[in-house]
Amino acid sequence: MSKQTEKLKKQLLEISDVVNAFQSEAVQVKIVDRLLDSILEERDSDETIFRKPRSYQADGESKQRESLRKPGATKVLNQLLQTDFFDQPHSIADIATHCKDQYDSDFKTSELSGILLKLANESKLRRERSEENNRFEYVKA
Image (cartoon, rainbow, N blue to C red):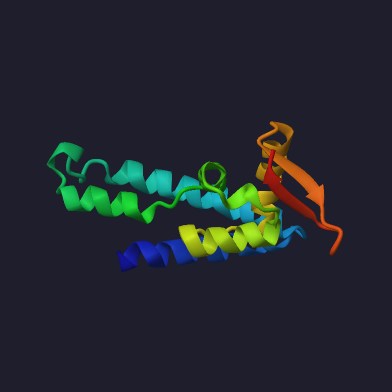
């Protein structure tokens, strides 16, 4: 495992100058994300020879892998729609805090804003400006 980690560190050092050349942090994150995905796909294809078939894996191993995967922002917001959370207006920051506390999902407000806008356009939520701070709040339609 440390051999793979060392190889990954070396690869990241090689690409760091190229990634840092971009001014936008969002672009940098996307580039690194795509590179890591391709590295992981390459590694997975190399390791398929040595893996046990899924039917032979211990039940605990597959359950542990599933528990590490957290639901995405869309899924969490759709779950929130099923509850009474949106009966009262909430700002994006309130929603992000609630997701962190209740679902252990640490979303940035920028991750939630597009999904909330989509839910508002689908008439699942209403988007209203708060008179207190002139920010948008979301409430059930």
